Image 1 (cartoon, rainbow over the protein chains, first blue to last red):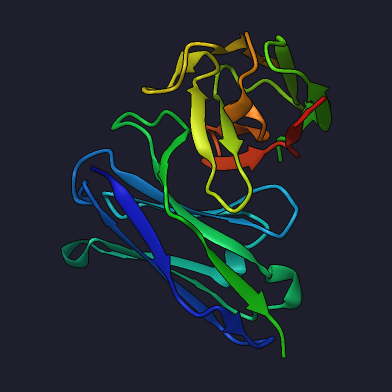
Image 2 (cartoon, chains in turn orange, purple):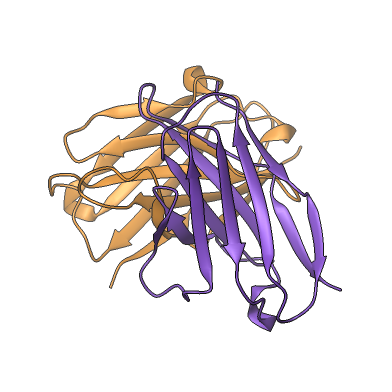
Length: 122
Length: 109
């Protein structure tokens, strides 16, 4: 059974760095073709893809947020970590981690975490 | 960036109705299109991938079609559990980036 769960602070101050951890089970990010992404959703708005990391350490970022994001993985702990620098109130959102479906990339997210609401406020 | 335009933004329908949601891409995306259902306070749920492939466990009343720039999600007979918000999502295989549509809220008529 595949599960993912996000953890991190619920509240951060403007200009601070956000660190979120996705802890997953039911698959290994060392297995060929496995990929995990981070996606966020501001309250009442649509979803926004942020970053992706692959089994072979390839990393991809949203062009609009690239300078602020870093994604990494700890295969031994089954974790993916996202850091976002210089947080602003507009970054207030529910942050999800999700697995990309299929060993051959289908471009779809088949398993999602429950999400974590992060509020940026002083 | 590839933009995704969903229509309508809100749809009022009754149980048993046939419902169609459209998603248009600003440029051709071949069949790199997925559909999700999201209920309040919950994570999105994958319904359709590669434009027309039904995700395992998803009822067969859901179907997807299209290629290139125009795509459709159809619910053949709306059920009470289907009242939710639906999102299309494209994957750009060249830049390895994703974009979601603005969403379609399906409400009870």
